[in-house]
Length: 557
Image 1 (cartoon, helix red, strand yellow):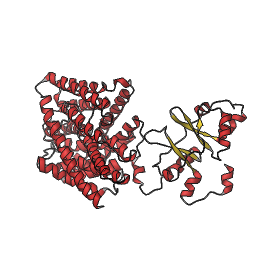
Image 2 (cartoon, rainbow, N blue to C red):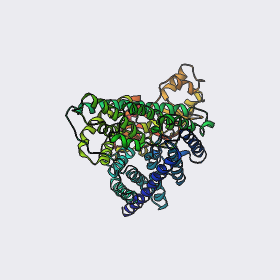
Image 3 (cartoon, rainbow, N blue to C red):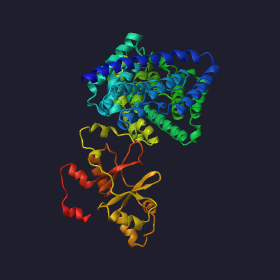
Image 4 (cartoon, rainbow, N blue to C red):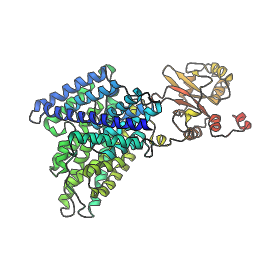
């Protein structure tokens, strides 16, 4: 425990310094590389920047693409908390170059991966066990977000709510220590300057609650549009020839450059313009145009494979949507509503809740930014509505959906929260026989007859697991005169069988056995669902629970 606390302090201080360097580097370089008064440079700089970083990401740092949140969760739940120092360096420098060149992505997600990576490197070099390394990864995440957003409480909440999926996780204490340390480093270096300069707001009239509800609806729909567009574009780019991977980011760079030529505010993270919106400097037509362009630019930049996150753009999108709703409401009800800035502020949390799906973090984050309690209730109303709409129209959260596009099945929050439950890994075993997809049915029968009394068997082809074939289906095929039929042909005519992962609970395995009427399920890797890890059998699950099936029941099967 003492080692963990000391390392938490070290991680917090180191991650704070690195995040401050990230903020200064991207901000000051960006101001020099694409100034507002130079139209042609606003096209050329992001195009060249994405070309250079695209090559570096393809050739040297393949794990530094994107926001870094899915990669961090992959490292934590699948790769034993291992993030290499090479990936940390690649993420820092590639993201710095991308964001400084005007790519319409954010720095907070990359900061989280850098913080997690530094925590992983320090823990492994300190000789800690795998479980101790995994426990310090979310600590680095908390420290990074605390410094990147200047929100120490939200940094801790995000690590628990999104990264761990468990608000009662045992890392709470060390995450708080690291987050507070990182926040203090930020203030020592950059001073007590808030991320946004927000005037005090108050509820003008109860009718505003209705307007905030409308904002929740529009913000939720905007969030869904953004997520679906981003996923669709990324899927399209992923399907392109492999040799084009290093060139794909240029499409995002050129796209945002062309948009930036006409509307410079769409480039980069855009916090300077968000600050103006929050202070009431709003032109209705411009904020509507910016909301649409930012959704398109961020989706294109991310989908094409540039390095950068979606936290910052989410706040930008939310601020513009909120300002648009507030401006219309203030025009219609001038005496009963606040100015557009108040709605822009709530809109930031609304879009964050709808896109990132962390409603608790979004409320606390906006509260920390404003340090004003009066905004909490409107924020909760709008966030809840946006979250509900987002969940109904886009069931899979964005980070899980991004991982699925890469063939990685991250554990759901419900699975991660059941920390004390017995897992499939505690009951699984190796299959006594594995069948080839090209094997004739008769040969398969001969193989399984001498290897126990399982009611289904794993079938593999050249790509890995193809499915499970029932013993009863093999017997029926032979009796029907199909002894020479290949097993793959039998599988193609059957519905897909369910699978489980090693970290699934035994209860989940029982539920899936019941739905498929199977007593054997394949256990596959989260990194590749066609990689067979083992099998889990009903008898072994019951034995793990201390229950033995009667011999007569086993004989029936």
